[in-house]
Image (cartoon, rainbow, N blue to C red):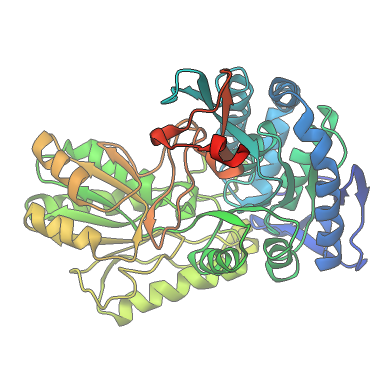
Length: 508
């Protein structure tokens, strides 16, 4: 499916100016749906560009933090109006840039809008507390003060929504931001900054640097002017970021990383609901969500029937260009992503899996120009030494794992280095409660897919899934300091805990 679109000449945005990279080098942004389609030419930036952006953000910080919280948030309201006007255009750009099906791209834009609206509304709500003091003449306040310069490093699979999760609270609370979008989706990232500029954001408050992780992301993480790092991406990179921030006395980070997520299906589940939820969990966004289910842990009583139905529905999934309205699965995002998925498919065979649906690359028709693959489904008893049952694949690669008792299901689920998303399908509230209490996860669902986050709810995981990306409200804690401020309204000094001042003795 050929899509006519002019080639965008992308730019960095530093100190209110659109500029080329200091290196004068560029890289191509091509559609994973059709690699013949050149979408943009993008600056290949370096540490020099990070230095300029961090300096601009630091210079803009004192004035920006002095704006009232409400006035800062009003920029987001203007931003939302601009995005609403261009919502369909933005969704279509996202679809061809990252390969996400058009209905999912529209939902991504809506999620970003909801996030901005949430933070616009929060600006008029309490941002601190007044607490009682032991001393009647004292008042004690807890205030939130901005931390300074925030680095927002975001992934390609939600190229609009996730940047909004990180940028909106940072700006409303008075921080300035240096934004590095994923190199796979630079044009969607650039549109965010363009809308913010048009919405009236002052120069330097939001700076944009395009480029690759080693050349831009890491210099940004380790830059001395950066006070907070907000990151969504792989566990390997997130671990490196946490180590770097731990070595720097003033730097704080929040890392939301990967998952080896599971759906637990009991034999008393609503059968059709469970199968549909499993298909959505495994194959929406072509399995390229940090909460996608790569393990379906199914009770023996319905194993054969569930497996047959799941494989049949997976076989009928519509794979195609992301702009086709009936597409369920678009392409993988890149050649590297394609090779990773195919490699894990081979590994499953090597580890003794019974392959039920062979997920090879689509090599006929227009799909041969993109990174399209079929679903790969297999069944395999749980083994603690299995890599395919423990490592994140990030693609349409799904294991059906049998279990007998609820204790087996819990043990199988938890025998994993990740702890992100979990779904349980059952009609028995006792089983549901046991799963809720005993399984290790951060985002849980009952009789639903493992996907479906809402902007006001916590989102993040345990163990190798990272420090967790907290809820929209809790992100306030990540980008601000909580400080106490106590005022004495009396005529003399009285101390807590009955501490005696003994000033009179000093005066004599």
